[in-house]
Length: 185
Image (cartoon, rainbow, N blue to C red):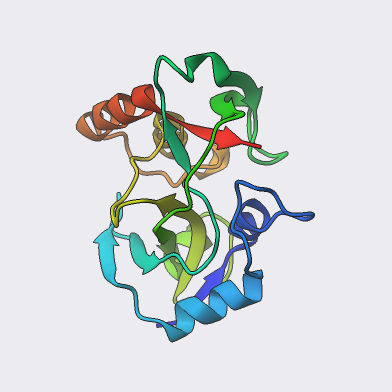
């Protein structure tokens, strides 16, 4: 099975100039090579048949993706309308600034099949393409953000996958994201 980074994931996981909340101490090429050479500890099913997640021990100094919201840090939450790319519509996002974040124990690349990526307008030569990566303390998936679930349900024209909304999964997502938030340096 072959795996490559998609252009979408490359810019988010390995931004030019680096970013403290992106993957650390690793180039995109080294990341791809590691995924090709090392079998994952676990393979988790994704939210649709074309998606899977590979659980790897974190070999970098990459920090966790999310931080729990507490009374002590709630005042550090920020929000804004942002788009992931110039082709997408801006949506409301929130994040922490000025919080201490532990180094993640796991990196969990999110993979889409070549066929699904082709439906979304991305051509790859490999069997699977990395579309994102979770940085976690536990070897399990962080629920997809509610806005990502909604974007997926809107279809590929709006930057999603075309997978219909699963109301139970959406409620689980809201419960998680009410108690947690991403962070920025």
